[in-house]
Image 1 (cartoon, rainbow, N blue to C red):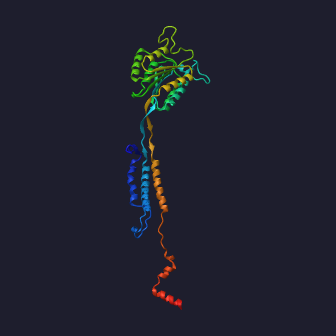
Image 2: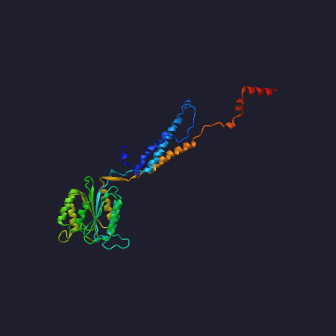
Image 3: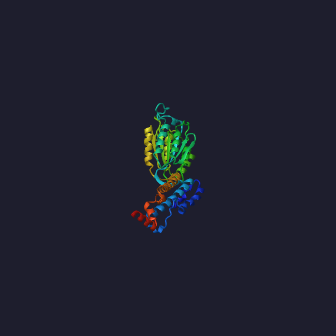
Length: 359
């Protein structure tokens, strides 16, 4: 009870100064009073006493309820911490021009999906299936762009993911994109953290940027996933180049090696179609099932209807009692019986009347 009172409020609190008027039923009854010679001479009537107290309480309830309803009462909102299953997920999505192509490496036509469209659809389903996860969305091409900071507002996250279907640019600056995606994680060290990279290729990362990324990963300790959307006929992550094995010749292979050297849990998924992307996302969803604290927002609740209902209940009781009350029966002098008139005669008049009847 003490926890509830601080959460109560009123839109017009000054109206509550009228609440002492609710004590008026204690001083005066709304029912008619009937004078009797002596109440003490009547036998005890517990039912009448109980009804009297009930009607007094009904009057108090009616007045107090009306005043409270006029004040606009409400219960304030609250933030409740709960424990669910999920993680903090930072999505890093490639927005290079090649994402506008299909997995076959051509512009989509008819019912064909581009890699960006397939990713958008499947990632939106992924967000919808993770009720207690926090999500951040970062897009990158020539430069990284923060689309949505870490939030539990899944509708906003899905809207941010929908933006990856817009036409992309040609250049891929994955190093700066990784840095921005890592910066989205909160300070809660107890939460599971996931960095999910969705890309159809890679690029060379400057050695200085690599050092910065190593420091950030060592501090944050995320679980790292790379969903590689491989175009048909292009080199895979593990394929060695025919010539010199350098980051310029095989950027995907060397990005994979860089991720493996970070010392955090890491998995790469190669997908050559929408079905393979869906299967990879299901695997990631199954892997990330750790407990996570989350905050449940409870909105403000209007209590005006409840106060008005209590007032209506009290008024209904008073109206029914008013309709049921009745006066004590009183004799009408004009309709007095003949026997009463006879009884009112004096003894002399009665004797004379008897003598006349005998004659």
